[in-house]
Length: 158
Image (tube, rainbow, N blue to C red; front, side, top):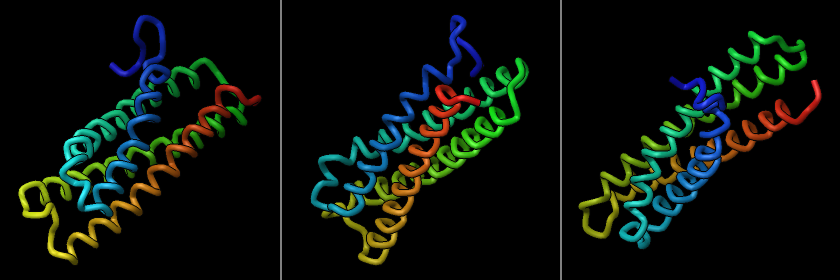
């Protein structure tokens, strides 16, 4: 299912969606978390991104696993396999941290949606904001590391 579409690896087609939507989720979630006055304006976008970005991360990882199996089956050097393994590791971490960010963002958006002033009790609001900022930073970092290791795998020499 996640292998190929008309002879092209699905991974090459969907990874760009993850590269766009994961940073957008990180940015939208942070703004939603730290700027309560903006919540009514961006709540719908944060909600949508909290669903779309983790789905993109999952599909990208699953299609990457299929591409990895195909590349390994065709043969690669030991150095090439290390580069691919590193890329797979970063991609897996990206997926899990993006899912976590999406879940926490959904919790915050849904919890504040119908509350007056779009805020929770101060401790809950601050706690969720801190968690979102940390998860957004980690997700952004791993998107970068995954992309960098993927570029090395494609364009580097091994």
